[in-house]
Image (cartoon, rainbow, N blue to C red; front, side, top):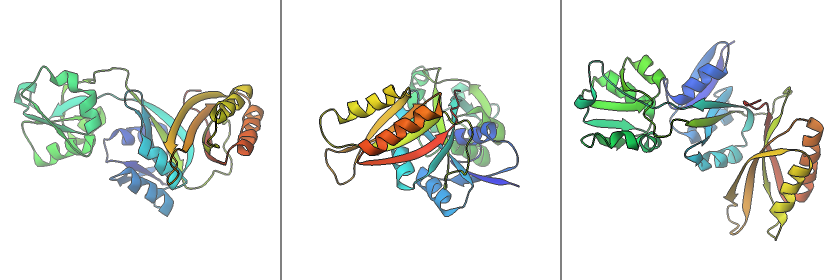
Length: 274
């Protein structure tokens, strides 16, 4: 049986790399232009699961994707941490002195800006996707143009890497979540969960909630707030917790359900760092 996995971007993208490293068996890629399109593909049943970037060790949380998880009620069933290596690539035979423009996603350009300080003659052009720029150079045989992308893009589209690992901060890791439409019937060995909750807007309410997490022996690995739409001054908290004992976890969850004005489990799954 071939499973359909949706990604944001095209073959050769970092999302594609995650699919290849995370999954086994026969797979079919569903390429989506945006994360909103990806979420709708999951909701419509056009794919079995999807891979979605959620945070980066340099840039931080990808806030719109938290909102999409909530809006489309996607269920997180796994995660994958990928070390991001940005490479400067171009048509075979090109050198750095031949390159006049480099095209890539704004985040990739930002993470590699220090490298290009030594090449002020190169124009940096923001575009939609890293792998897509590599594909354009290959398909249109564009000389004097480079792309910043992963090594998979160079391999797939037949480009040569002029300079590898050009990101300013070498330890550059992106966390991806694996999402689907429905809650799995059974998920063994869960030790991580993602929650969204809203608390009464009063002094100490968040501190009290976090005390429950601590008292129940859960480890808070992430907390992110987003404004509650149409309710100025009120915030929803997106929280990741890890735990050793499931009884501790379920106790904390039951207590927070009582304390919060609204509480939603976004996913219960096995941590990639276990």
